[in-house]
Image (cartoon, rainbow, N blue to C red; front, top):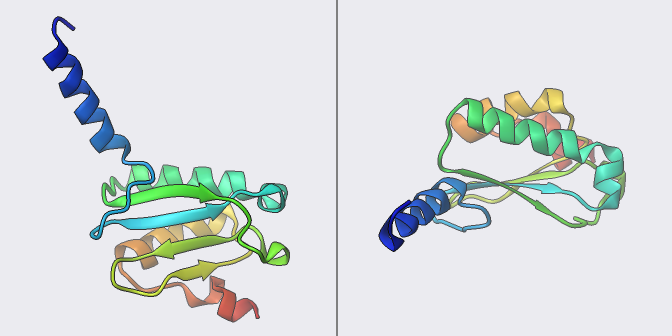
Length: 122
């Protein structure tokens, strides 16, 4: 690095790649509940599986974030998927094994996996 302009270019490139917590109208958000109840139920491996699957499929318009308590501890781990212009979809009792199917069917093909949603669990 030899100049301030080079540093600025690197900064811009990294900000565009990371894109954490940046709401975009064209972007898809996956939010994983990571409060104590979610972590105890296995949310961390679910979060890591989403990040890995999205990276593997090279989905640049998807942001994975975490949040605190979503309020339904008995259904943890909980994941919410926000697609532009649609109602959020809440997935409950998530496992690492379910992640690839949600990424493929819901995020890529825009068809929620109803059997994993809160409506099916209730």
